[in-house]
Length: 125
Ligand code: 5GP
Image 1 (cartoon, rainbow, N blue to C red):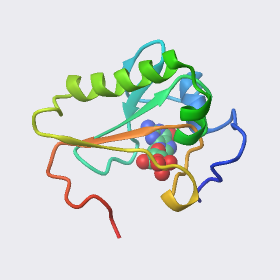
Image 2 (tube, protein in one colour):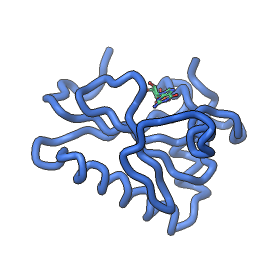
Image 3 (cartoon, protein in one colour):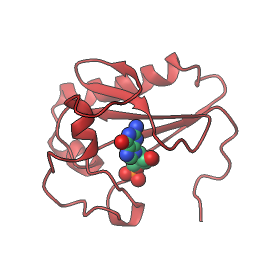
């Protein structure tokens, strides 16, 4: 079920638990501001999730409340992960769901990074 984008941060969400090391994830990158790991149900040959280490529900929360250093660090980490996984030359897609209409399910900001094949039209039906 999609989240309410205005809800307070829930420390028990699945990505908070991954950040605390309480449940495993197949990490591909980590630095002071971000963690990247493979999506558990990949929707493309490459499907990586990049999350900030801070406690932000969504892109809306992050863009309003994160520090300049957190925002810069996170954006740089997303670009780094795309380059390190060979996605720049063939091309890739970024997607961040935010709130009800988007279908966001996990209430910790995450950017989906898709690649590895032509990705088709921008939006599904
Ligand atoms: P959303 O719909 O919130 O944008 O995307 C949530 C994503 O998180 C989905 O693509 C889903 O497959 C992924 N996901 C949910 N639970 C887990 C988990 O425990 N581990 C990993 N690696 N991915 C998860």
